[in-house]
Length: 316
Image (cartoon, rainbow, N blue to C red; front, side, top):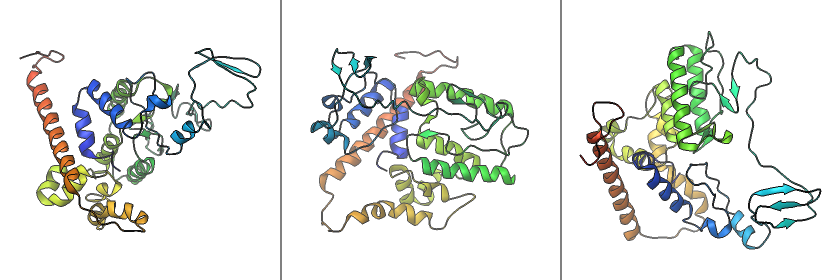
């Protein structure tokens, strides 16, 4: 809820890739330095899905888990690592290599899977069906909640099935799949475990556009500034996609305004009175500076780009 905000996504989308990777690494190391625990990856140039486990670091500290480098080879009952160290008398070896996408109950003419790449329009609809009567729900790996993502996919699929929403033409769906595949490889790499990876808010908004429920932030700031601030700076929860359009919910506004208090409330068995103090002010100043920096970078890029595609004037 803290990380999945429109403000964070807007700033990260505006920053250079190198700076973004450094900021991500700094944020991930905010609780503890992963390098000190042997957890820092060798290749930090690509963004992988974050894993949260509060129990893991303490198990490393007390010796219950030992981090080792890459495996060089196996013998009958031992393993040799790249640093030359050996572990003997192994009982079990578990390969946590991720999932393989397959649909053995479907003919290959219905959906194509090539090394975990599934040809689907926005990860939901096969583009070559004569009629849109099949949808794949949850076949996406967002940097956020899969339940929220699946719910929005279901809302889209049911409207397609009912005929109240339409899919674009086959060439447009193919072009979109090609474009998103290229962008995914650029952001997350070519690994087979990253074939379904996507940015949470970006993907949610893409599906929401198909339904007509994407929140209009500019209009919200004019009509309901209080909610607009929560929508932009607060958690990107499914309530945002119930403010307008099909499936509109009258309780969405209040749910957005109270979502933090309801999230924290179960832990408040002892209420502690405290003031926000200077820390809150510093956070607001930092956010404002980040927004200003991203805005100026965007203006600079627009000014530098010439009318000829692919040509940039540096230092102009």
